[in-house]
Image (cartoon, rainbow, N blue to C red; front, side, top):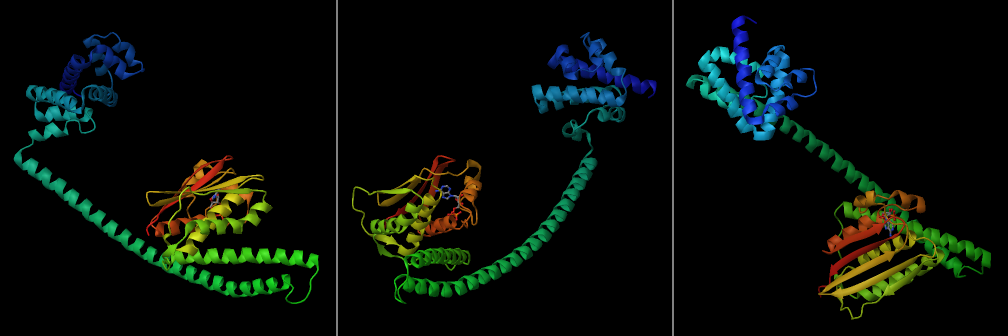
Length: 397
Ligand code: ADP
């Protein structure tokens, strides 16, 4: 760097430190610069010492220190004031020397376009126009590139989505065919076992009866799984419609509880039903689908109870709204898995170890049915302490 440039640089540092010290004071400037060796020199806190210390550094180090002070200035006084301060220094230097020299010395020392906003004022009209045209061109090019990329990605995604939909439809068809084909022989087996158990095909021993009942129960579970698969599949393919009629809800709840008593007994779980104080009038809902909802929730409450557990079913009727609560004191749902609980096939870790046989479709079906009825389903749960599932329905007559 020649002598003249050195002088201009020195002049810039003097002006800069002066301005910065006006705003921040010497202590803050020395603090802003940090722990490096140079701080010792700054600590003398005299302007000349600060200026000498800066001027003794190479250009890159000066730029780093100046950037630190600028950062400090703008954090304390805002970007606008910092820009203005820099612009004042720039104008003084421009007057003392020339815009070219001021540009050469100052601009490389000030990063992050800190002078960009004000420096534009110094451009001639033609230069400004050229700059605007250049920037507009850049923006248009960028925009065209982005548009092209977006339309390419959209086309790719549309194609991928189409393929996924086709695969999904084929999977649904496949599942439906299997489930239907399983259903017929399973009901055949059910009736044959039923006849055998009741002695319709000849007398049987107590031991034979015990085995036949076990087979009957296993077959019932298989039928339930097939029915669940078919329901979930129908929901997926949007062929799921409600069969709406006026129905009586309390009797339905009592029927489902009664169906579940043998299962609860095998698990040593008691079921309590808290009947509403007032008579609930008949209202419109799909009885068989509501049976599925109650069956799934009560079955879960028993299944995820611990031995000697207690399941309490409460039914309330207020403001034309029916609200159910099915409460257990079982294994609960871990907090970090609660968000996924209504997703298809989802099973929490503790549920998988408590009962490896679930399929994670029950709650998905429950939510779909309640949503179709315009109702709401939700739950509260604490791991190792218990769960309450609620759902509410509008009791429109
Ligand atoms: P499945 O019971 O076949 O696993 P569901 O869809 O009925 O499928 O339930 C999904 C998951 O929600 C269960 O695997 C279990 O993690 C959790 N869950 C549902 N009900 C309860 C409950 N009463 N107590 C604890 N966890 C439950």
